[in-house]
Every structure is written in C-alpha cells, then in structure tokens.
Image 1: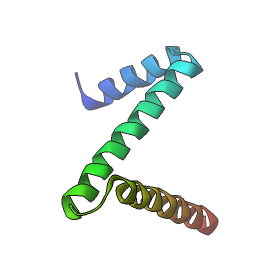
Image 2: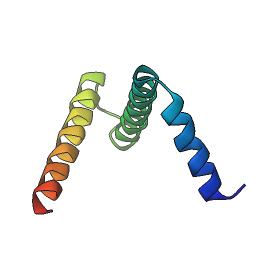
Image 3: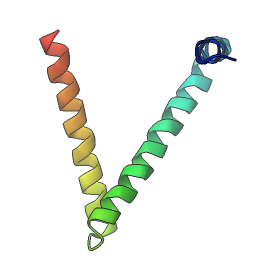
Length: 75
C-alpha cells in the first residue's frame, strides 16, 4: 500500500467516526504532546518542581497560540 492510499484510508476512517470519537482522538493527541513536552522540560531543567514544569508548558502553549494568530493575520 502506498502512502497516498494509507492517507485516503485514514481519512475515510475519520469520516465514518462520530464527532465525539474524533474529539476523543484529538484530545488524546493533545495530551500525548503535552506529556512529551513535559518530559523535554524536565530533561532540560531537572531542578524544576512539577508546578514550574506546568507553568512552562502553559507558556509554550500560549506562545504557540500567539504565533499561530500572527501567521493567520498575515494571510
């Protein structure tokens, strides 16, 4: 199976899902990316407390959102 065929099958599978199922997948992916980012922060700054790690995570999410907004304004 080619990559294009795989992509089309995946898209077809998503179309057959309910909105709730797609939302659950999206939220799961968001949580997984947050977990990876938390671990990266801990690896880079091992002295931080859990609260400080969470603060840095929120800061990264906020900065990403702001960058996305700026890019959309430029279109």
